Length: 234
Length: 222
Image 1 (cartoon, helix red, strand yellow):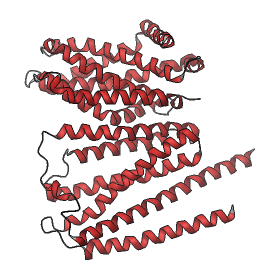
Image 2 (image 1 turned 180 degrees about the horizontal axis):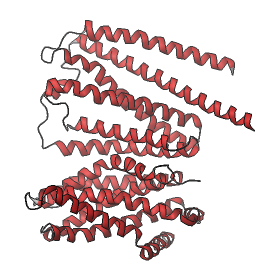
Image 3 (image 1 turned 45 degrees about the vertical axis):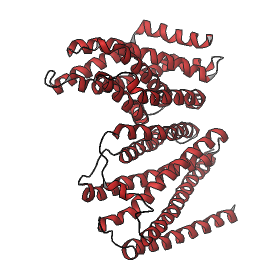
Image 4 (image 1 turned 90 degrees about the vertical axis):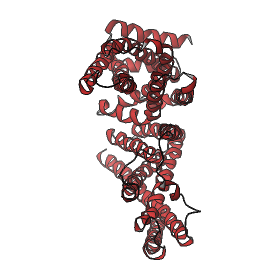
């Protein structure tokens, strides 16, 4: 037990250090290394945070989906904790996507918000997983909270492709913001931009793992504390 | 199958005696339509433009009321416990409830449409067959997830708040499709022209009926 705990601690520390180093690299890349976009100017730099955040949100909700299925099959508390931790971190990054998007959109598109398919889908995604966290806060901790949360974790993920199709069809008749097309990465990016972007992607992924592990451990500690309390009362 | 009919019959008998679900929903829908009419000044704008949104907003909101009632009523006298002790698969219990909810919602919609047409002086009759297809398809999907979510919501502290919070975001594709298809029909399109939306709704119906059928046993308290 003791050894196991210490090993865990060491890994978490390593993760924390890795986040620190890669984040410094990312900041260097974003502000010093990557050139300023000729058309968009400095505001383009938000792209290095915006897109990795979106990727993490999808990754996090994907893990909620898998962990939810695992929980219903195995009935193991760790799967529920993983789903919970991942959902919380996912909502944070999804919020970041929704916040950084308008900061970029306002100077480039001229509006804070537009009902573009990607924006709409992200907003609905955010709503679903905020409801997921609300559901958890509505019930006492335990197997029934875990079961109902797992159901929403599964239904929500299954809904995503349908939402995606629906919002795309919904907006096809409307003109797409022209700049949106140049935003796609790969072809339109200078090599230093692409490198910075990839480092940012790596950084955010490690950050996601780090935060989720911390949150997961917090939940485990809470459960352990509760069981100790029960034993003392008995 | 016969078990399903027994379950359905039970819900019908209860509903015929109390008229709780359908009447609540119906009154609510009427209130929404009347409120809308005040907000938008009938006659000043094209009703056909407004109608799809107006109808679907009222059905979506009334739907969560009725869906929640269908399980809240079961909580009295421990009916839910009795239902779970029935020697049938939990999935069949779900199908019974879902089917009941679909029929109750369709009944409300069937009464609302003529009243809506009458109050807003809007000729809806020539669109009726197409509208019936769209409304039936969308109601199936809405009640499919709604029945699952109400079974979940009744165990929560503020269930009246939680059901819409769960139901609305998940139903977004359904609502978009319903409003778009209804709008298309009212603008003179044929069913074939809005068939893309109907296929999307069909996929939603099939996916969520199946998943809810399989998952329902976890949704209901043990």
